[in-house]
Image (cartoon, rainbow, N blue to C red; front, top):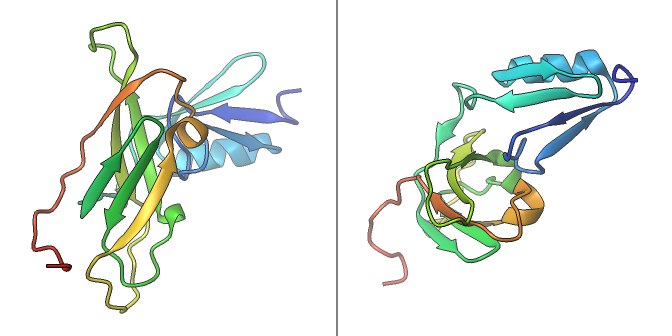
Length: 158
């Protein structure tokens, strides 16, 4: 059964910024995808579990132009030449076992998977929005922090 439908669950992270789980219909395809993305693989009777130990080396930690956070959404402002899309980003989500207070705490780091090679002029960058519960699979009640650097510069609106 596991060779026909294999669910590769990512431990509290988003695979390609879409979801915390990836569904694969081909066992070997799932193993190859995990290998390409620098993931640890383990198997049990019903699933192939894929745990990303680190993002691939060609992905870069994004230096943000701005960050807007609330209970369920994270919006980032990033540089763009006109071709930047949400799919260009991936969020590393790590459960902080050292957190105190009883509420689960997650540490997020945003990576850019593809550079924007377009030559447009967007001095204010673009906004990219993530729904933390739907896209990362975070629980109903949680706290989070973001480790990315935020660039300090002159606001283009002033």
